[in-house]
Amino acid sequence: MAGRRVRCPECTVILDIPEGFRGTKIRCSVCKAEFRIPGISDEDILDWIGTEEADDTSHGAQALRPGTETAATGPLPLSEAEQAEAFPGFPAGFEGFFLARIDSHGALFEFPAEMLKPASFRAALPRKCLRCGTTHHIAPHMVIFGPLLKDCTTLEAEFIDQSTRLGEQELHQMSNEELLAHLPGPQRLPHPADLPMLYWICDMCNPSKMIRAQNRIDPETHEGSCFLQIQRIWRAEEFLRAVGGEDTDAHDKLLSVIQKHPETPWDHLPGSMQQRMRQWYAPHRGEKFVSYCPDRSHTRTEDGMAGVLVSSRRLIYHTALRHQESEKGEPLELCFSLESGRQLLRIEAPNWEIKNMVVDKAGLRNLRRALTEQGFTAQWH
Image (tube, rainbow, N blue to C red; front, side, top):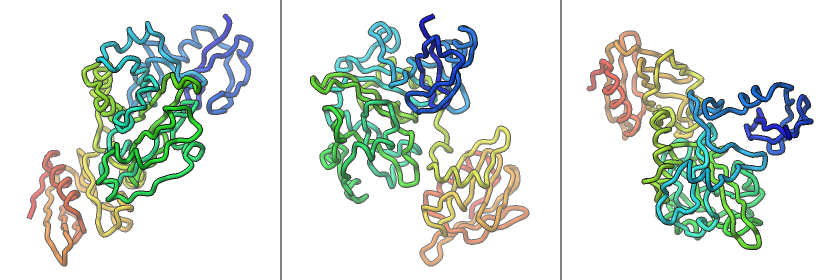
């Protein structure tokens, strides 16, 4: 054989390896990780790469079937035959727009570069946190179509020379299209990759690895294609609907994946909250997280450190000094009151009691709904 194709164990891109490198140590051209090419058979290498029937990529806890694999310098463009066979049926105006792959890195879209010219397309990513989905306390970030398919946060320092500081009230009043007019475009990139494109992250989530992008544009003719990879499959579906791709085979494919991997209440928590709550909440086998009511005697940026958690089996109260649990079948009494402008909650279980926990309306509403939906024996006063 003239060469091999192997997957980098660090960044998972597919590399083309000459035959003579079998059994030697190589460096990945994308992430620079070093690993050894095993001296194994063709069949073993095919199993390692993955086939249409079995793949080692995953989303959540289940494996997903891949589409087009990733090359050492970025995604491989689909051939015309592959495009027609994979996800046909896009309406007029969608010529060249394709869902190239769905895997553990999210959904990868390929589209003509000229689609970046309308502001409506560059504002099509949902105006909510791309990680947790909240619409509050969110800030705009820039999609950067660099020469390689990379995390956009790693490219900000290289291609963004200035930033426009806008307050949350100003952001709330401006449409996405109006905001695009105020944002600086990425520098030193061919047109139209130098036009600003928005995505949103809340102040409690990390934007890292949420968006990857790449341009393959001829700097002379400004023609070519772009790639956009959205890590959260649910946000990818919202993006596809926003650009008019709802009645397409690609949208049906995304929906079929979402049905197998539905967004859960845990997915709606910011990453920092998840990390804090993992310090005191470990689900039992078969147990599911349902809701969290923060203790508002702490600041919002400390959410996850204290409060009431409801799972499918337990109610858990936690602070730095106390940790109390009540099983689903145990009786609970909850009393809500107002005192000096504060909303207070008292929780009484058979073996413990919490007095005057400060709550907000959203937390109280989520707690009441969770206890009712999960069938807890709870009496409210």
